[in-house]
Length: 250
Image (cartoon, rainbow, N blue to C red):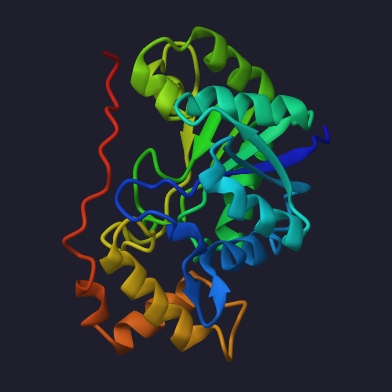
């Protein structure tokens, strides 16, 4: 069966740890533009939608979406689950691929791999990710689920953290949703290629400056090769802790 596959990218300018991080320039180009360029290379994505907020802080993000020709939806800043659901509803999404706007090195091949796994195993899994058990580098995270299940989560989720994080309701309720995970052949979870703090930005800047000018379609293996050549780079953001999301049902 064929489905419309909508990638909804969650993004906002008001990050607490590094405000405006998604539009930080590297080689004269905003980080989010790198991410959009990479997402567009995914073979199994039919459309890209940015889900952002109604805050005036996010006006520059909307301008970038218009410049890039990307669809967008503006919703609640606090109730992220509702914002995401309303974005999916507004664009009649069917199968939803969720990524966040702080992952400029996201790999389209890994994206397609997770989407393909979801498609191949439907209806065995309601939710598929490559981060339930983290084996890929942080920053290559992908989640896939149906609009029907997103709608259910939006209606039923009551706890504040379940509203602040789109997919928490799924893995808080494994009795309601069957969960699937795609794992990397090698455990690469020590690598951190997302942008939350200045140290993350420093590493991502070095990697983009090294790779993008001569190989703009680089993938995960290319990044790993560069890090083997520059082992000290891996230490730049090794101290940064990922924001903790409680995985257990309260």
